[in-house]
Image (cartoon, rainbow over all chains, first blue to last red; front, side, top):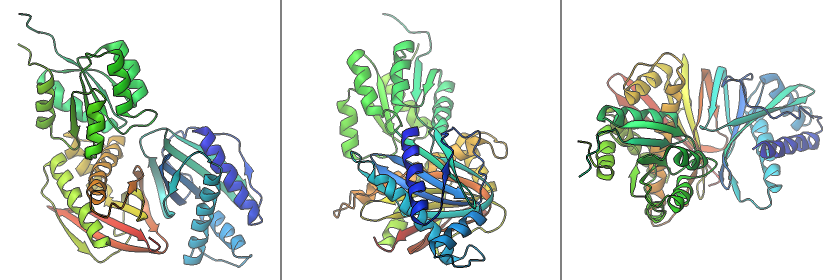
Length: 150
Length: 128
Length: 157
């Protein structure tokens, strides 16, 4: 599973550089200590067929706004409005999509992205082991969480 | 005629902790013993070898190794194994695959306690 | 199409709830609104859908209802935020959604639908956004409690 998470992480870094941002991967793929989430903004993309599970991209609202702004050519965004949310969902969709192109022998389908925003959140990704990792961007951290059946 | 006096030993394998508990609650009051639990097909194979239970109740959809694959491997090594497979989906195709893997019984979730007990009693003779 | 899908998910939900808890529930379609519960701590189970139709199935309830259901499913009291509450809801959403998908897939048009495993979220002020999706919402009621099933189907499906 760590290999798959590494692939999703590299794809996310790839997309960050495509939009003109630099992301530094932590290089660590860990089992989360608990089910509580650090960040308030999450985008979930489900996986079916050869890999069944979900990948979750989470970040703070500020990080999300800055990524969205960069994706929209530096446009000033005051809050996570409809356009900003759409941009972040597209960011996650692109990252997952790029990752899937690297799985040459696997037929994997992805669901449309769903954004969940909340406070004091806990998350259970299915019933199996989950791994997390982080990418540090100029505007804060993106956490990637992957839970799949193997 | 040999009369069994000891409780039947049942191994429960499912990725859901809820199912472990539900099966335990249904069967222990009826005099069965849950001798072990597991979370996937690989654990089922290892545990079956160690514990040699009277019955293996196992989910079909599990990570690492699914129940049908595990059942095939177990019945190859232990042809006398008594296995009941559980699934949330009752597709005919899955059912046929399940029965072809050598299992003795196939049940669809959700089940009431009584339904599970009845199915188990069909597989294991009541204790005198 | 999405009306039939909502019907399948909702009727299977109440059948499974009846079997697992003994509760007699009713369902009705309500004005689509996601989230439907905007105060307090809520529990959401989110499953992704792929195949000829892409989208999400979302089960939403407040924490009190989640605990009530889990206690009935387990036949015992559970403490607040007991992990068994979330394991139980994961199992409930897995089972009723799996049954709904099986019935939909057995239709003549064979839509080839697949579900992801459930992702369960708990939190306060939860907002859920599904871009470019058609939303339908069902409310499932019993006694003085209720939960919601939302079906968000991608408009490009």
